[in-house]
Amino acid sequence: MSLRYLTAGETHGPQLTAIIEGLPSNLELDFEAINFQLQRRQKGHGRGRRMQIETDTAQIVGGVRHGRTTGAPVALVVENKDWKHWTTVMNVEPVEGGDEAKRRVHRPRPGHADLNGGLKYNLKDLRNVLERSSARETAARVAVGAIARQLLEKFGVKVAGHVVSIGEVVAQTPNVSIDELIEITEQSPVRVVDKVAEQKMTELIDRMKQEGDTIGGVVECIVEGLPVGLGSHVQWDRKLDSRIAQAVVSINAFKGVEIGIGFEAGRRNGSVVHDPILHSPEKGFHRASNNAGGIEGGMSTGEPIVVRGVMKPIPTLYKPLASVDIDTKEEYTAQVERSDACAVPAASVVMEHVVTWEIAKAFLEKFGGDSIEEIQANVDNYLRQVEAY
Image 1 (cartoon, rainbow, N blue to C red):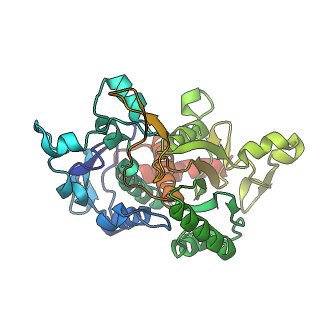
Image 2 (image 1 turned 60 degrees about the horizontal axis):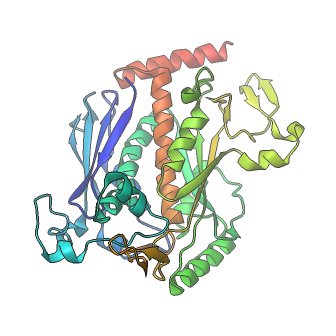
Image 3 (image 1 turned 180 degrees about the horizontal axis):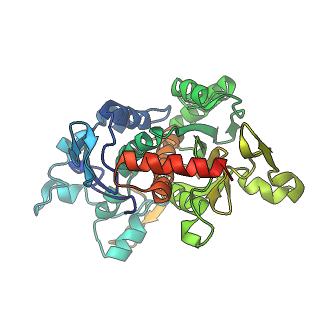
């Protein structure tokens, strides 16, 4: 069975809910580790007041018994602490007048799903669109990815993320191990190793906040410890890089993705783009470089997978842009909802987990089994086959 999940819930509703199907049995879960990943998502210089209200934790309510998965669908819930201030506005029962009328959104915000969603679903209160299209939903996706991370960790796979740039401030590429990258960036308010860039980034974010503006950036995810052969070349929708790219661009405010050197490959000669193949008794087949970012022909090469994503500036501004009232069709400034000045460090954490999910999905497609023990046997057999090739 293919690994999949669905999420439900609104940004000011009572909770976010996720259901995961396809996890094997006997996966021992560390609940504190899941919540640690949720807390990482809430950190970062430039986050708004919402992060002071919410302290995200995941409650697993199905599919796990005595700390281990049973093979049944896993259901988890992330409560919205801010719900208590929205019980009337977001009530599932019919409500007349009061806060519902006051908080009706009729001025769509540029850069958001407001207008497109209102037109598509014929909704005259655009809150019905923004509540679901909000990046708050990524809390559920991080929780789901945190479980996938624990699955991959059982097989020696490590995942790390960091910020490459915020605005025009670019951090120096870290020349550290993946363990060092995880440790150092966890102590940085903007998730970088480069301390000079860190200072410049925090100053830029502060300036944007003072000006009522926002700023975006580029983040990178690295996955180490994967064997060759995840994904496939035989169909377009089985290629690992295409699946990762779709997942990354599905993150709120992400507008682009690249694998390895990405767009830089279009500015270099082929002789310096492609990675020479080597062989040694110790390492077997491997690459002399990793410009491909660990994926060739839609399949993992065994080298680290390197993915970058670009996040646009958050479109909710405290100096709002021009818009049009959907009732009167007159020009107005867009309505302001609570927002961050910069969410790039948090977006790095989100991207880690959506990439982790796609890797775990491809991993189970390759080594699938109904229990962790069966998967381990399949992995061991495959690695012997690759070693003897």
